[in-house]
Image 1 (cartoon, rainbow, N blue to C red):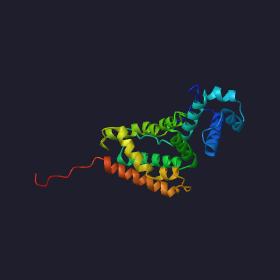
Image 2 (cartoon, rainbow, N blue to C red; image 1 turned 135 degrees about the vertical axis):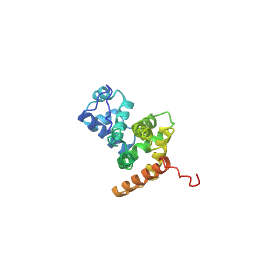
Image 3 (tube, rainbow, N blue to C red; image 1 turned 60 degrees about the vertical axis):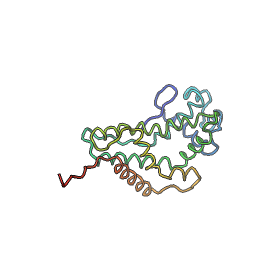
Image 4 (cartoon, one colour; image 1 turned 30 degrees about the horizontal axis):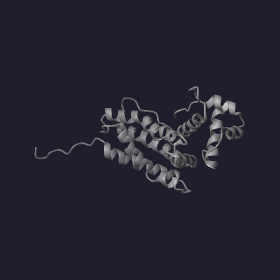
Length: 217
């Protein structure tokens, strides 16, 4: 799990994380048009404290999105003896955690707001969500893909391209359905099935397969 940071590039304290939870609650309820004064009232702290901890409103938004992204757990890497089974276990555990987060109401609210402001020039939320969402997930998985390539478990030319494929297989239509207002979320069993299927499909696409022997040779 990647720890979000405050304006001084220090890990957040428990109190600072409480403030970010208040921001998330406000965004779910009202969108991102909140003021620092409203956050201060909701979190029972002063505006001066908010500016001291997070720098400015964009800093507060960045820390809030990072806190949400930190809920996606990154399984521990196996050692040098990475096997296909171990590789699949890592990807599947990551996919389950990722789906649990992005199909929740908070992530859906953040993504709806980011999309609504994209290209408007009035808010950096879209950029913040992009950098701390898909791009951050790609950064976390890069060492896993590269380790699998180095141990000849998969054949990929570019880890970023491999991530985009994995993203599509894992997310499928869950996220778009949530963004369009579907109230229900997938069950835990549904998430696990989706993650397992996505990893199997990814390995089928990129896995190293033994070439058929030429029986006439």
